[in-house]
Each structure stands twice: as C-alpha cells, then as structure tokens.
Amino acid sequence: MSDTTKNILAISISILPINLIMIWYRLTQTENFSTTDMTVYPLLFGGGTILLILFLNKFLLQDTFKTTFNSGKGTWFWDIVVGLGLTAIYFAMFFLERATLMQWIPNHNPPNTELINVMIDLANSPVLMIIWFGPVLWIGIALFEELSRTFLLKCLWNTSKNKNWHVVAIFFASALIGTVHLYQGLAGVISIGIKSVIMCFYFYKYRRLTPLVISHGLYDGLQFAFFIVQFQH
Image 1 (cartoon, rainbow, N blue to C red):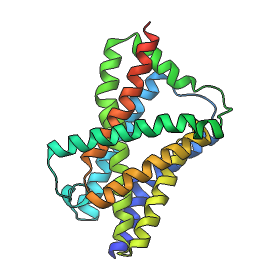
Image 2: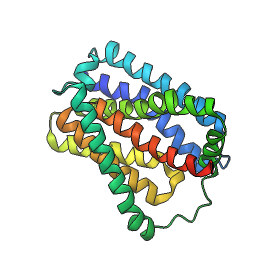
Image 3: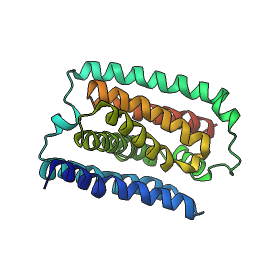
C-alpha cells in the first residue's frame, strides 16, 4: 500500500465519518442535545476518536506522536506562552467579529437552547462543573478537535510536497471544521473557519500541537465560565 493510500485511508477512517455525521445531524435533526449528551458524547466520541487517531498514526502510518504532532522545536514553557497569546488573538477576533461579521450576517435561528441549558445546569452543580471543565473541556473538546485538525492536515500534507497543496489543505480542513458548527449560523461557520485557518497556519509553520490545545481549552472555557457566572446571579 502506498503512503498516499495509507494517509487517505487514515482520514477516511478517523476524521471524515464523525465530521460528516455531525454535519448530517445538524442539517436533519431538530432535537437539541441534553446536558448529559453534551457531557458524555465529547468523552465517548472525542476520546474514542483520539485513541483511533493515535492507533492509525502508529500502526497504519507508522509514525510517532512526535513526528506527526510535535516535530517542531519548543518547550512546555513556550507552548504555554504561545497558547496564551493565541487565546488573546481569538478573543480579539471574537469582539471584532461581534461588531462586524455578526452584524453583517445576523443569525435568524432561534437561540441555541442546548448551550444555555448546559450553562444553567453547570451553574447549579459543582460536580458537573468539575467534570465539564476538566476531562470534557480538555480531552473531549480541546484535545479531540486539535488532534483531529492536525492529523487531517498532516495526512493531507503527506500526500504531496507541493506547498500550494499544503495551503489548499489548510483551507479545506478549515471549511470542514467550520461547517460542522452549522448550529451557530453562517456567521459562526465563517468565524470558526477563520480561526481554524490561523490554527492551521500556526501548525504548518511551527508543528506544535500543545499551544493549539491550550488556546482552544482556554478560549472555550473562559467563555463558558463567563456565562455560567451570569446564570449564578
């Protein structure tokens, strides 16, 4: 089996199915996820996909974790510093998009009650809050999404050394990831797609997974924490 076939097979097994299922679900189903769903599913499907990616990377692609996800030079200290810097950039973009993109493309869909319900439940349950801000946020969301993003990129890049193709792969991956967030409306899809492009180009240049996980966890976690505080008063 050629290297190109192996990489396409790896994507077809670990990345495309779960993303296409989520897109299909958002397009065809009207029932919102419950708080239990929002807690269990990230751990079950996110954690399972993480293990699947690591398995395919080692046994199908015969690569190590370092060569695929962390081949760039760096230290834990600088990974944390960069992660904090990326988080600041994401929040700057968030406020800029609220004043521009969200105004230009208003979301006429009903409010996302599933997220509101989760926040209310978290505000009233310290145990649930610990579970959500612990393994759900950092493993089921941040690590899962960033490991999936970088694995998709690395597999696509492995099929060709052409730099133009590498850039095309970045925009393809970002479009796919943005589309998965259809429930946030068109502006949300574009917003997440743009942030994904930044993450992808960072990984393209520096090949460090950890800062992406840190920034993703902090960006999502701080937003949730802010709204939960509002529901507690």
